[in-house]
Length: 99
Image 1 (cartoon, rainbow, N blue to C red):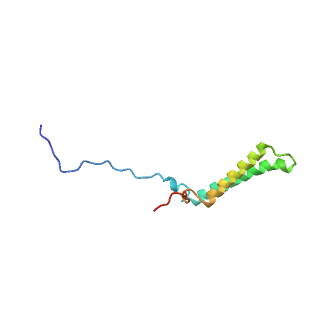
Image 2: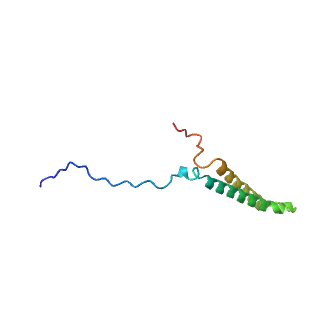
């Protein structure tokens, strides 16, 4: 058997272009996305909170469910504030410093 040798390198498959956006660019590049989602969450949290407050204004004693609903409403509203003020990818954890 005779070995055949060629001087040309083997063909490499063509690399596909990277079209998918990275996770860091999810909301940092789109100001309208940040505003829409932040204001939407802020409004939804306010609605949940004020819906729980309505019976208290009428003089009813707040039960654990009402207090839980108020806490969830505040949590949703604060999530909206975080998206408006500090979008994904801007803040870094305390322990990780880029060098």
